[in-house]
Amino acid sequence: MSVQTSESPFIFGRKAVGNSFTDRENETAKLVANFKNRVNTVLISPRRWGKSSLVKRAGDLSQSDSMKVIYIDAFSLRDATEFYTVLATEVIKGTSNTIETWIDHVKRFFSRLSPRFSFGSDPLNSFELSFELESMEKNYQEILDLPERIASEKGIMLVVCIDEFQDTANFNESALFHKRLRAAWQNHQSVTYCIYGSKQHMMSTLFEKQSMPFYKFGENIYLRKIPVNDWVLFIIQKFAQTGKKINESIAQAIAVAVKCHSYYVQQLSHLVWQRTLQEADDFVFTAALDDLLSQNDMLYQRETELLSDTQLNFLKAIASGIVSGFSNKETLLKFGLGSSANVNKIKKALVDKEFVEFNNNSAEFLDPAYELWFIRTIMKIKNRSEL
Ligand SMILES: Nc1ncnc2c1ncn2[C@@H]1O[C@H](COP(=O)(O)OP(=O)(O)OP(=O)(O)O)[C@@H](O)[C@H]1O
Ligand SMILES: [Mg+2]
Image (tube, rainbow, N blue to C red; front, side, top):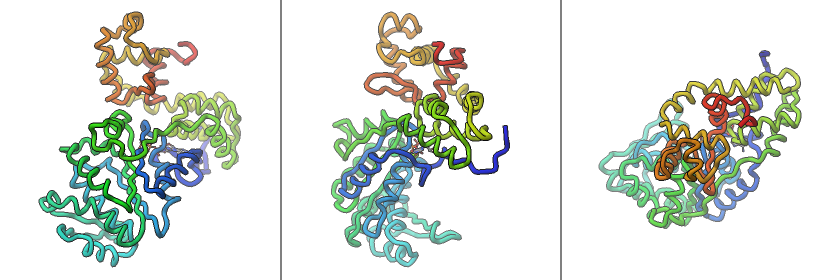
């Protein structure tokens, strides 16, 4: 492999921003309009298709003196108390930009709660609030209403974006927590909420089931994949910008190999780019794809070892092109899936473990790189065409 001096034009594992961000014009416009029109939005997609990047883009475009966008990531939060603390901190930080105003806001907008604030070595970025646990349990409402009170007093609009929302379902008494959110949010006039997350199944349950507190909370958007043609243009352009070439058919092969999954298209493009001196060829593409799979080999191996035999057989059936009708006698027998009652159990387990998802009743691997690895390593088939 050659040593590259210029920086890779492909990014993965971080939000796609600026000119690393491609396509999604309609979704961006839709979100921007929802923020402006105070329509709450629920954005759902499998892992790493581009939710966080999209919301960040729409948020950046919407940010102005009269509209402030704040972001909360529920991923690392353990309980409702942490959520309230982060919400309070981000709302205070996001609605003004001087330390004096923060302190003033803390004094003015809290009456029952008396938070302590602390500053780190870089006060502008490491401002934090903390609350007494007991007082927080009684007065959580004050924090939930904080965005609305600040926004209406300042005559601005606030957009509160909450990423990885599905993780709040792991909080203790999460149903009560969700009820409290919903009860407060439905009275807010100057705040719009944008909730997003993966774990399609759990997110849909939270937002679509009539018995759940978030039923008809706002507009539910299921993110689609970026289409092949857009990826092809993007890849060709990124190669060109760094003085390299790639033809349409190899650019297309990259997107198709990983089924247009945003993260993997960027990662595989990067691996091809890295190995390309002047112009990408088939040899480089094959080596890059092998590289992608071997990087994940250990992880995939470990995850696969945890599956039961019938779960493994079920994945083999999907990899062989079966997408529905798993309970047919013939399929049950051919793939060793046990009884049809067992099929339901297998489905549920594989969806919970995020191996598989069902779209319009048809089964698909959630991770296209894992699917390729599975076909090669477990089924011992080199190319999909041999299936
Ligand atoms: N619009 C886009 N244009 C180009 N690449 C993108 C785009 N959106 C996402 N990506 C690529 O996909 C990766 C994952 O994007 P992002 O983190 O936004 O997805 P996510 O759905 O929020 O993922 P997670 O489920 O892990 O939170 C990015 O690092 C980037 O490589
Ligand atoms: Mg994300």
